[in-house]
Amino acid sequence: MKTIHLINRPEGTPSLNDFKFVEEEKPTPKEGELLLKTLYVSVDPYIRGRMRDTASYIAPLELNAPMESQLVAEVIESKNSNFFKGDFVTGMLKWKEFQTVPGTGVNKVDKNKAPLSAYLGVLGLTGVTAYLGLEKIGDLKEGETLLVSGADGAVGSIVGQIGKIKGCKVIGIAGSDEKINRIKTKFGFDGGINYKTTQNISNDIANSCPDGIDVYFDNVGGEILDAALANMNKFGRVINCGAISIYNESEIPMGPRVEGTLIKKSIRMQGFTVRDYVKDFGPAIKQIADWMQEGKITYSETIVEGFDNIPQAFLDLFEGKNHGKMVVKV
Image (cartoon, rainbow, N blue to C red; front, side, top):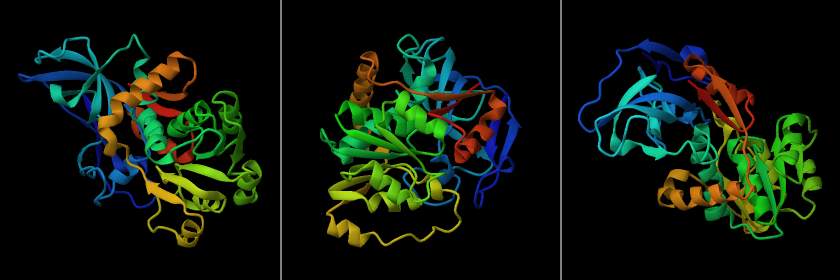
């Protein structure tokens, strides 16, 4: 069987040369373990941070060892009384075609309630991130204006839909006219800004949000964050969920000093890491599932096929080649 190792800690943008395919013998489960066959692999921007050997909210990936992310897998053989052959599970697992795990490291998912890939997206960490970021920091109120960057992405598209459910005006920022059209027609955003063609992002935000921004859900950081801050209302809230615009920078670029704006407008700006709220995952997933059943939330996926294409799918995230959740079907 094949597994994918990290062999370099990239400087700047990662490349295929940072990964290596390694052949291993297919494992056999011991007592209490499961043998899993990988079905779907989640590739996410946060993995770029784990490729660095620096302290963070999650341990760095080891060199010359398998990559890992959220996976959906099928139980091929079980030596654990809590699982049966044919069960489907999700968890933080290795980029391997097959692997053994203890039964405590994975959770069952039901393919009859939703497509299996959805458990890596709207019914997985993606949906939970959108919901809890707004719930814990955003404190959305009916009638407010919500601005979302990365609006056509996995998290941003769910954020916008929750904003509409809450009765807010929602404006999205994305990187193509096709994406802007999709967030308005499929996800119900009230408007959108193409950051790649705008002549002045701050002015375009001001024109799209004439009453100012009450909540900004930030997935990109950088100059777009600077422009959003310039248009925040008093007592505005900024959720710093991601900063994909600077993930590949070897040195963090200097932007405007924000402290004056934060003080003058009494803005709350807070970093958000979904793993800080594990105890809230269950209720969050249930609420999202209920909204899906009611037809209030839909989702998009970009599904790439083939185990060998996992590294390239990951790299494509930084080119904006995905709409919605990027998933590899093995």
